[in-house]
Length: 93
Image (cartoon, rainbow, N blue to C red; front, side, top):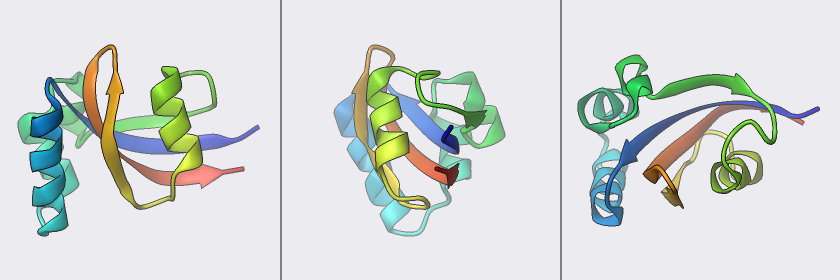
């Protein structure tokens, strides 16, 4: 069964998400931005969500984590919780 480790930044608007993506593209640290800006408690750990399998997260999140490239920041990903930037840090298929 596939497993993935990921980290994310959760914000309330798509524009916030896009602004954070730009900051990351310009060289700011993902974990530092997660700690500063994420509304999820995982922000305190740099956005780290640990290791999980398919179906353990909401469908939109799962699709991005198990369909995107490892090490590439993806987003905005809209869920019922808000807008996410996410990065798969490790995945086994």
